[in-house]
Length: 156
Image 1 (cartoon, one colour):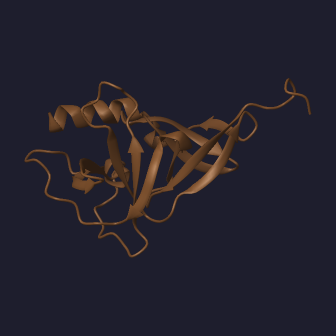
Image 2 (cartoon, rainbow, N blue to C red; image 1 turned 45 degrees about the horizontal axis):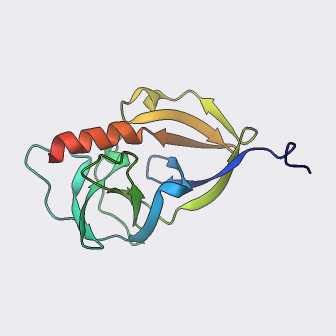
């Protein structure tokens, strides 16, 4: 295949939640660690902000997209993980955001043929960008800019 015939492809990561899964670009993933109990959250913070964890000497907000999507708060199971993701904005006060996962994430290849936008009742959520089908699996693409802005507003 010549360079012109190659299909544009990026590496993505499927992040398993209780309510489904998120799809983010692999380049935003820094590390996946075992679950650890977060420190308490600031008073008046939304319930989807589970607290703050310390990772590599940084204080990082821990977010539950499950709670954000209306799922009840559950005690994390023994397979629970935390994904440490780089924030998008260079001006952000928080260089990383932690996302609570139900298990280990999976790498996927994403190209025009493997992904399509679908309809979903949660797609109107302000912290979700799109609901997609990737290789016949449903996933949400989070609006990481909106999440980052919300966290900055909450944490100051």
